[in-house]
Amino acid sequence: MSTVRLEDLKQYSDVLRTRHGERLNVRFVEPRDTDELQHYFRSLSTRSRYNRFFGAISELPKGLLHDFLEVGERDRFTVVATMTVDGFETIVAEARYAFHAETAALEFGLSVDDRWQGHGIATALMKNLECRAAALRAEHMFGDTLRSNETMVSLARKSGFTFVNHPDDWKLVRFDKEINLAPQDIPCASWRLAALSRQADSPSASA
Image (cartoon, rainbow, N blue to C red):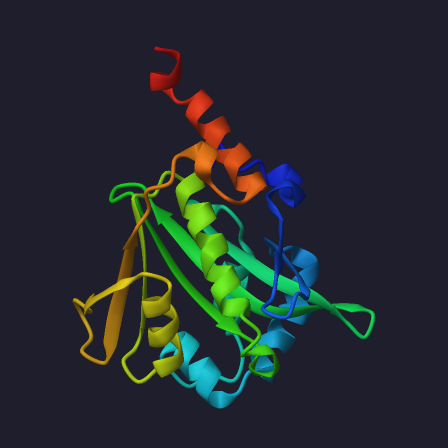
């Protein structure tokens, strides 16, 4: 997509903070992350993987791994949240999102390493996704989760999402939130620039 210059992915990175003040780097996934990303999913507990993918898997199947590593293809993106652990950059959370231009909606899913849950990482990542949704001019963002996933349900409720029944699966619940941020009000600097660039490039901006 034109507003995300994929040749320079680093400009779309953000530095967040956990609840305890630890530095959390959020960036697009890169090909060099292949092994680390697969290791991340293998390291999740069985319950966490089930909650993330609504099914029992032990690792990302080859096709899904390929999809996760494609940034910008069909307006689908993967970001990883990393921290320096024992001197190494370590993936502690991930999120996958897709922008649906026809409905001006951003759909997303995320997970956090079991060892790092309770540090406020999911809350910080959710807020960052709102930045990305606003920069893409999404009018609302939504996700699906299992009704039994109390952690995600609680996070979405605290983050201001409303809940509706899932249209296709009774075991799932959908949470949705309107996005009302103007580009200049987007709290993440890199995505504010992306939004302003998108605004400047739009035909209406030069009319």
